[in-house]
Length: 514
Image (cartoon, rainbow, N blue to C red; front, top):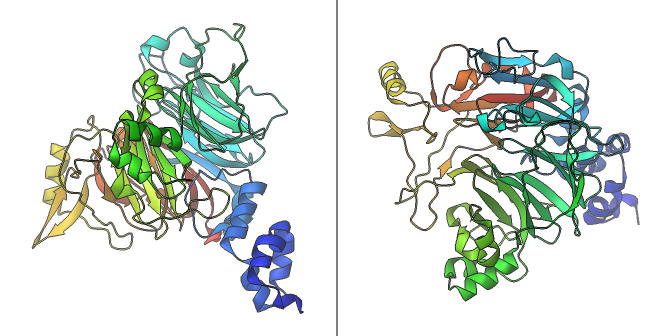
């Protein structure tokens, strides 16, 4: 048998995964047959994950992995938005903590301190940023907790420039997530997570089972085990001094649940929608933390919302606080294998979440919308953005309250005119909003009242409240009611984004990646 006659699956599943990037490239140059084999997106995706310490949960990218691999060495960090407290990392703010005027940065600006540091992912909290390098190091800047109740704690302290989080030198962080006022991270030891509300005193939590993902809510953290069990981790204990002694390592104890426990409780409480949706062998494979709830994706493509406001009751009757989000779920059985191929993906923050599907569709939802009715799906096409007339845009700007939660104002054409759909309607059984924002979107990130969508082609679109310039469209103080491309990054390829509060961030590489 000739080497070319080996079955495709043997090459793809056994031989090629053993090769490094250089070997794959050389083999691809030997023949058309090997060129096709060695340029498989799945192979290069795994090389990016392994060689650049990129988490599986960063984005739902389905193409461009080989080009990305070749450029990640040259990543750069850009931030913009509210900067009155120095949260963007460009140096000390002016004035005292409560008497500073807003100093907005209204277009993306490079944070040159992080140039050459190999940053591969970034996340934003309420008033801060964290980023992770390919070497497993974490930088933080901003204020972890700017609420008045946090005064006197280390969380209230301003970090005006990127500073390494005080983690042990011998550990490698592999994934990172931010809540409103804390951060949580996994390390290479899969039974350990770290969480902190300040960069000086991170705390270690040990688990019995291996972890596959961490996420953050406003009230704590979520740790997903390899068995599909979600463990809820309380917020780290506030610290007033770097010398203050706390227990630095704890064995996790707390509320947990799985699809098995949900199904058992749903049968007992006659919650038919939940019990009938959970098939034998199904399990949770991905989670997204929101303000007071979470989104869970199952192996077979079901999407659930779980309320987290009453943890004691959640432990005893989890099905009572669980809703099947049918319009976000697969209509037929699919397979979402974290270590292989996924057909659905979830992300979220604050009150918004996104569900991504294989054809490139992204559906947006809200955790606590209380409207009922039919679902409205509206498509936004990247190459033909729809816009209002000048008179209509001026009228919309006057009618929008930037301090109210965003309702995803998209444009839809009806009859001879153009109208704005201000609120998506929801079905009675899911109690969430839904929008279809188009295709080829691999990541959606949410601030308090502004949103960003990243495409597989490396373009960034934003919309929502002006939010001190966090939209990135310049100094004109206006809200944007439909996705608009951030033109300041036109000469860059954006591969990662992190929105939060009233600030935004992007990770970019040279445009040659196209």
